[in-house]
Image (cartoon, rainbow over all chains, first blue to last red; front, top):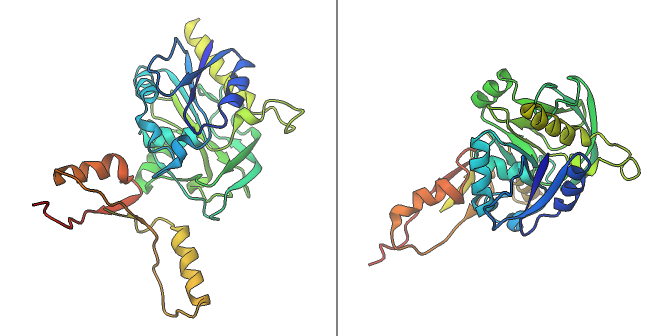
Length: 225
Length: 73
């Protein structure tokens, strides 16, 4: 199982994503100018401030050569995980529905959040039980998930909401308390909190983030078997 | 190009400005929205709308309006 972690100018959580992925499989960095995904079984679009967040977060990164390859990879069913800025990039690339807007509190906010697993049997949450809680840090200024009412109803109906902020935890004002959503096909997933920062008891006190990476490994290896 | 948050979507910047104005003595202000302005020179104005759709605005959450200031002649 090999993860490819994209690296844009302005990425800052790429190395943590790489380290987290290496706890469950092989992983390597992929520079944004490269089109070759080097045989990756799954792609991680990491957090940070790609291209300085100019215009809108993720708006410029979406057009990078590496993202063109990721869009083709996703169209063929490849697994793609977007974390924070990576989630914004995937929404801008239309690989995921909706958009991320400025936090309702207008502040960059950094805190540990409790998440509820809404769907447990997916390529990104297969190592979790539905209804389980994950304790994972979030840190962003542009994390208010939004989708128009009709699209939102369709997503909820189709089970595309995989993670919600637990009661009282939705600090950014996301619609329906949404913390993470998948695409219709189920192979692309984005979330604002940072699973790659919750992989070591010693720093952060939670290893719940590993479950996301472990779920992806199970999905890739299950598909091969 | 004038780019604005779509009406009906919470615009916290607009709300913050709307709350700040009365503190400075400006009364009777409502419906404040903060957007952005993109100025550019372009040879073919036909390109402006696709530019907005593809990059300058996110049509899911923003409205845009193109104003031509000069016919370029």
